Every structure is written in structure tokens, then in C-alpha cells.
Figure (tube, rainbow over the protein chains, first blue to last red):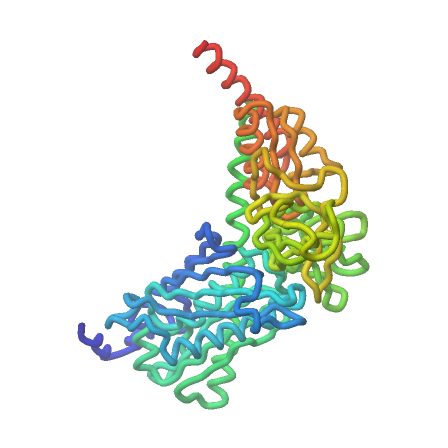
Length: 255
Length: 236
């Protein structure tokens, strides 16, 4: 399959992007929690055309034993793209890029997890990209932190992530695949909202200092919006059961 | 000042309270504000704010009653899986029988795969948990049904002052022993009674965060008993 052609314009006359979004608009996001039975915690995210599954195991006995630390739990993370997640078949073997993303995802989540509560153990985190559409590291972080929370692992906060980029000279939120490829810059950010801590900040392309500052502001706002969706998704699982059983009871009382 | 609704589900990082509160489990403080550290039910007990987790594994505590499965036999004891990140040891000195290494064949007491009910004798951050089977009711379990649920739901299964578990025992007519690590043993007079008790335990796990659960379970058991009665009279 040939590489998708470069679109003529990334922004049209009305100031809308190729998928019809405004420059400061996120792609539609769907979040689900606890969709895998066998994992201790899991989450699924759809952000635009991204489809990502995150699963968490642990804390469990550290294996191999020599990776265990005496004072805290170790977190291992694997970011992996399925062979069918991109236009051309991707080799399932871990690539340089996947290893880098595994590392940055781990490092963006490590500061919020209370690892000191579980010395000598290990927490495994799997981020599986089923379909990729740009910004998958951010969507991966968003899903992975939800999966950690779903596993009941004590953590300070849920981490939200979002990217900002520059296309045709203008700052744009949450780049899609084409915008990422043919745009001028990409700036992924992960935010711990309550403590205003940034746990991921990367950039490729170039931005002026003032653009960077404005872009960072846009990303932080977007992360906060995503964070409230995460919270909702996390509680929804429990609210659904609660509503069903408590409603049934109420209707029985009336009858 | 409470800033979240008590008895409601809270997410990690959610602001729970501000000011002079005592810090309970699964909560942490920044300045004067108290936040939740896991998904769970927000509980207020006097001045203490805690979050009762809805999920999570078992972390041993000294004195806990735990159910375990033998996975290996060593020279002077057994390695026991107690469904926690740490493998437990049951030393031969904590079982009845002659002392000292190689004085007896340990597999005659516990073989690999045997289930046991034991107590956590010692555990801290640096060492794996030690178990003991010295005590009333402790030891090998070779009959009954094994029910595994999430360890986080055990407090709910026991209930306030044991209300839930004693109701379950009375209504199903089964003997039930609950390990803090999420394994329960059920002994009943008939397979039906046991099935009913197991079902009820799973129901507690599924609906642990809802109100009026004890009553709902009592009702479920009563209903099943009636249905069972009808089935029996029809087949007779």
C-alpha cells in the first residue's frame, strides 16, 4: 500500500483542519475502564482514529529476581504497535522508537505511583496500539494511567497527556497522523493536574520561545479536559453496577 | 471540612477534605488538603478520612488469617502462595511434629498443591511473610469449596462487626471461613447450599460498593431456597 499522499493544505480557508476541527479542538475521545478480565487493571482509549489498549499486572513478585529493588516497586512498561496498526505492515519486533516510547511512558507515570508501598515487587504495564493515528504516546499515557488506577494501585493522581503541534505556521492541538507528518513541530505533554507537574515533555521540529509557551498552555488546558474525562470513565464502571442493583431494589419497594 | 460525598466512589487525586482531619488509609496530604490515593469508597469515621479500596491485591499484615496453597517443599519448611506479591514461608517449626532439618519427610504433612489456613506470624518490608498453623482452626484444608475473590472486597464480605458473614452462614446453613487474602472456604450440608453460598460471595464481590447489600443478598438466598424447594417437590 502506498504512503498516503500529502494533503494540499492542512488548514482550509475557514481555518479548519483536514478532519474539520478548529485549531484548538481535541479529537473525539472515548474511554473505557476494566475491559480485560485477566489483567489486574485495564483501559481502552479511542482518540480520533487511535485505538489503544492498556493492561496492568501487579504489584506481583519481581521476575527475574535481580530486577527487584529493596525500597520500592519497579515499573516495567511495554509500548507496542500491532503489525496491523499502520498503513504498511509493521514488524512486530520492538523497534528503536517503541523502546523509547516504553521508556518515556514509564517515566511519565512513575512519579505518581506510590511504589514505595510495595518494595521488592514489580508492576507490569502493557500499552498495545491497535490502530495508530498520531499522538499515540499521549493517548497511551492517558490509557495506561487509567489502567493503573483500575488495578487499585495506590497513586497520587491520574496522569493525562496531550500533544500540541505547528501546522502551516499555526499552533494546533492534538495532531493527527497527517498533521504530525507534514506539520512543522510536535510537542507532547503529560500533566499531573492537581500538582501541576509535567512528567513528559518532548519536542520535534521547531517552535519559537513564544510559540512554545503558548503551545504548552494549550496542551495543559487540553490535559485538564482529558483528566476530567478519565475520572468520569473510572467511576462509570462502578456507577453502572450501583445504578442497576439499587434501581431494581427501589422499583421492588414501590411494587 | 469535607469536600467529597461520603460513601461515594472517588478517584485517585480527588480532593477529599481540607483542614484538621486525621489521615486514614489510601489518602495523602499536601498542605492542609487531603486527597485520595486510589479508587474506592470515601469513608468518614469521626475525624478520620479514609478511602476503602475497591480493587487491589493482598499485602500481608501480622495476625491476618490467610488461606494458602503449598507450591514448594524446602529442607525446613514450605513455600506457600498466599496470593500476594510476596511468597510466604511456613517453617517446619511452626507445625506439630519432630524438630530439626531432615528429621522427617515434610511432604507427609503438606504436599505441593495442598491448601491450608494459616496466620501471618511475621512480615515487614524487608522479609517475606512467615506463616504459622499453630492455633485453633488452622492447618490443612482438604474438604469444602474454595472461593477466590479480590482481597479488597474481604472487609465487605465480613461486614461491620461480622454482620454480612454471619448472615451468610445463618441463611445458607454453611460453615464459611474467610482468609484476609481473598480466599474463602465453604462447607455445606448439601452441594446446593454450598453453591448458594458461593453465589452469594461472588455477589458481594460484584456489588461491594452498593448500599443495602446485606438485605439484597438475604433476599437472593431466600428466593433461591424457594425455587429449590419447588424443584425438589416436582421431581419427587
